[in-house]
Length: 203
Image (cartoon, rainbow, N blue to C red):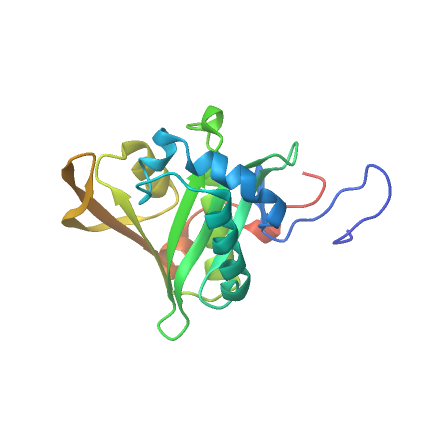
């Protein structure tokens, strides 16, 4: 098996992948797609965004990402293996290499694919990267207390509930609670599933 094949119809062995997705770095050409996703009101309701995003603002964010990538964070675009279609973003932030921890964020931008397992598959791939390549000890996340679909996905990936930050976010005219969840290295190791590096290019 070769890592990078050449020629018509050849396949690539993606470095970070799941059963149906692979993760790749963001490119400048992705910016309009990111803005389209983030400016959808339903998608933004699960994020900390409060106002529409402009192309210019996202370009400024991207320039900073290039500096931070691999240092304080890792940001990836989630793509379908069967078509290469970009469907969302996922990444690690507040990377603490001394204590071995990082926060996790995910956005499935293509709403027609919500609830079809792509987010869970992408998160599994990211956790394999976090624990299997970066040697982290803990990955944590924050989720709106009423985001039941998101919580189910996180639980499938091995995340455990840690606690609630009461009235931590003000949105839509009221305060909302934020739940904190995390997964430790030993809990990830105990999961019975294929790891990112165990998938072959022929799958």
